[in-house]
Image (cartoon, rainbow, N blue to C red; front, side, top):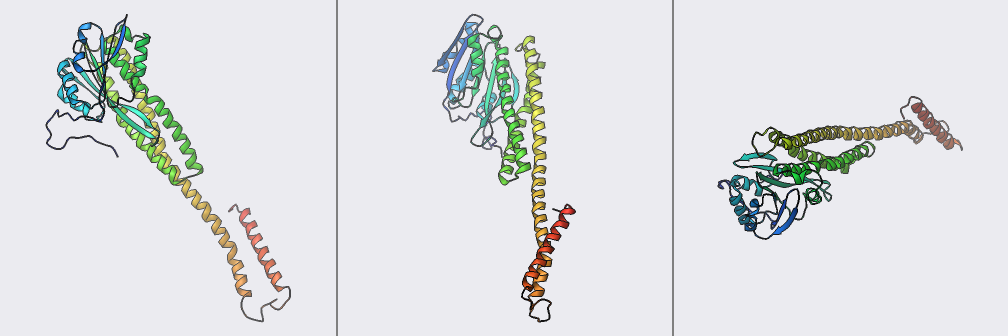
Length: 348
């Protein structure tokens, strides 16, 4: 059900395996007065950025160049085990503290319209006192576009604060992407619930299992976010300021809300299986009731037809010219009488 990444047994620790996408490097530098964003061709062009005295955001999209990642890690002091986790997607969302920097792994939800389910893209963050590095799997998606837009326009607090606030803004944008997706899932659950009540079908059952699988994946990725934000708000290092911790507490609250919504939706989908089974049982009972009524009506009619179908001359009315019509009238009267009786007892 879930794709778990792993190295072959016996592989040395911190072994880096490249991804499929060639990386795209972008350097963003800003302070309260200026903002600069440029594409970088070589990793070595980034090595002097920390001397600028500005906030330095290095964004690497794509995991296809192990050598570039190794050089980046060697210059900024990134731990080899953390670099292995970057390339070894998907990882469980987590936060780890290394000398001089934090390493954060998150999973970003994306709606797959073709399969009508949720898929995830991994995003990794390294941030220290004078740098922040974000690494994404797929260069074709601009996950952090809203953050860049805010920085370009100078709106909010981002341009006047440091790397810890930028890390918060990126994490907050990731958390915010869960809300519209959960809203879409909620609408799908409501529609499916109505369909299962009115028209239970195998297609509806498949949709239900797809929703349950998406909710399970969401729970697996939202649950660790609470611990991640709790760790950052309780951190005693100097990398996260007291002002930024207040904003991180808001992210923690959002993660708790998301978890509550996911648990509610899981309970709804669990009960929808009972709704499906009950609807199918009710339809079966209705069909069986109609068939039973028809069978019950035809039992005495079959008896009469059998009696008058016997080759005996002594049967009353057998030689009468209107005997056939009298028998048909008797059968019709009997059928109407039985239907009236069943309806009066509310059996049909």
